[in-house]
Image (cartoon, rainbow, N blue to C red; front, top):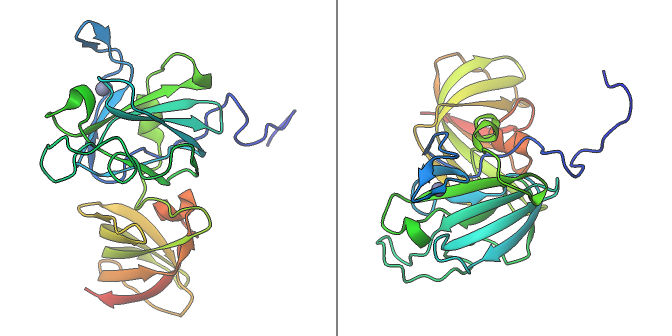
Amino acid sequence: MFVGTCVAAGARGKMPPLVFPVVGSVTYGDDFGDPRGGVRHEGNDILAAKRAPVVAVEDGTVEYWTQSASAGCMLYLHGASGTSYQYIHLNNDRTAANDNEGKCVRGTAYAVADGARVTAGQQIGYVGDSGDANGIHPHLHFEVHPNGKRAVDPFPYLRKASRLLAPAPSAGRMFTLKLSGTVATATADELTMVADTVSAWPSHVKQSKLGALVSLTLTDGETFAPGEQIVAWTEPAPGTVEALTGAPGALELDHFSNG
Ligand SMILES: [Zn+2]
C-alpha cells in the first residue's frame, strides 16, 4: 500500500526499471571502474553479434554524437526520467567484414533519426566496433548518467533489466512472434512455453538457444500437454515491455503446429 504523496511514473530523477539495451545473445560483466589505458572505464561492455539490435532502455529522445574518435558512432538517449544513457561503438561497417566504410548514419550506426522520440524497447542502433573498439569483438559500451551527471555502474541495472524477445515496433504499431519450444504448463486459458527460438515481425529479428519462458493466452479451447514440442504464432500485439517479454496475460496464441 502507498502512503503519502504519489509520485508520477517517469518523474524526473527516478530511474524506471530498464529494458536491456541489446536484443539477442550477450556476454558482459561488471567492468565499471576498471583501468583502461590510464582512464577508468565509465560503463559496461556488452559483447554481442555485429549489428545486433540496440534498443532504448527507457522512453526518451535520441541524440547522435559523432565527434569523438574514441567513441566512434555514439548516441545519447535522454531518458524521460532525466537519466541519460550513452551508447558507444555502434556499427560503422557496410559489409559483414570490418571495412569501416560506413558512416555514423541511420541504417548503419543508428536505427532512428537524430532527435527521434522513442519508446522503451524500440531499436535505436546496431552493435558494432567503431572508434577505439575497431577490430575487437563488436560490443556496446553502455553508460548510465543519473540526472545527466557523473556515470554510475550500469551493472545492477542491467542485471535487473527486461530481456526482450524482439525489439519494440515503432509507436502505435503491432508485432507478432513465431516461437518454437516446449510446453511447460497449460491450463484451459493459458499456455506457458520454454521458447528456444523466436522470429519477430516487423523487425525480422531472430534469436536461438533462448530458453525464455513465454506465456500465451488461449481463447480457442486448445489443449496442450507439458513436454509437447510446438511452434506457436502470436496474435498481433502492441509493443509493451510485458508483451515483448512474454509476461503472463500480454500475448495471445493465434495458431500453432506440433513441431
Ligand atoms: Zn567500454
